[in-house]
Length: 162
Image (cartoon, rainbow, N blue to C red):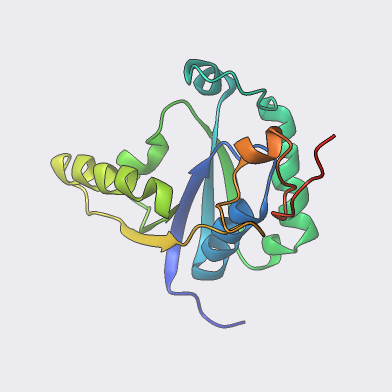
């Protein structure tokens, strides 16, 4: 196996309705890191988001992640740890071992905020790897919201309206 460029890589999210975009983020993290820390939003954090969305509970989202990781054999590419996070920063603002943060175009600004906080605490900024948004067949980004609303499936295919 080819040597990977980074020791510890982080990626975070709610990972509700695990879709093609989530999988691309995760694949990227597993390809470049020897260890991947996956920050998974807590039920409390989801509840605080003031969203009307019917987001699956933490246990189901964790199960979906674990199932995909094992099914795609990502666990053979890198060791990983799923950690529950209670805010948008998770361990990224204080973990000295982290080297890289894998984000989507949508969350790039948050990554720059994380780096500002790290620097203010005397920590090295993280390398930010931006994964482009994955588009559905209609040319719009795939999102859990669109999946929950019945517009598209997890692969971005349109769903027939009843």
